[in-house]
Length: 181
Image 1 (cartoon, one colour):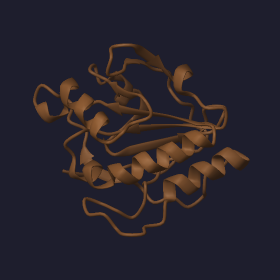
Image 2: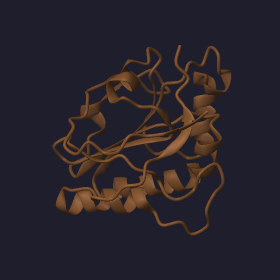
Image 3: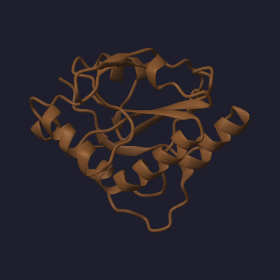
Image 4: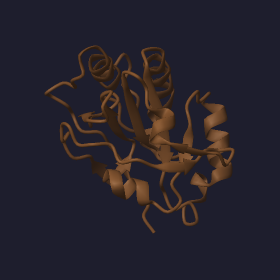
């Protein structure tokens, strides 16, 4: 089911979390926070929207990390009913896509609820003080890649790193609904 995210609630404070990574190590918001901001993204392995953009998302996340922005990806889907999103498949997905950032399992779905995440992908871009500055899309791609699409998330987060503010105009991300229990 296609879902669009709500618009950015500028300044909303990032909820803390402590979730296991793919090796079972607990990772918190403090562990991933960057000196210039933090990107928390809710993704999964099976969503066609995520699959279409994962290459661009990883490339942009790597650039953001180089600019002092911490990155974490969180998988909150009910993997019992959607086995493509199982921890084993998360490991494969992260390896196949060369993740250089933590991919975390939100098995209880409490973190997705705290963030009010609604779909995959759902992006939350925070400034250095954990205030929300971006809740838009990666770029114009949907379940189909748009060649040479403007890197909206990358540009927004580089702006946050430079002057602490996200763009006033943001286009909501869209994707598959989070698979709640």
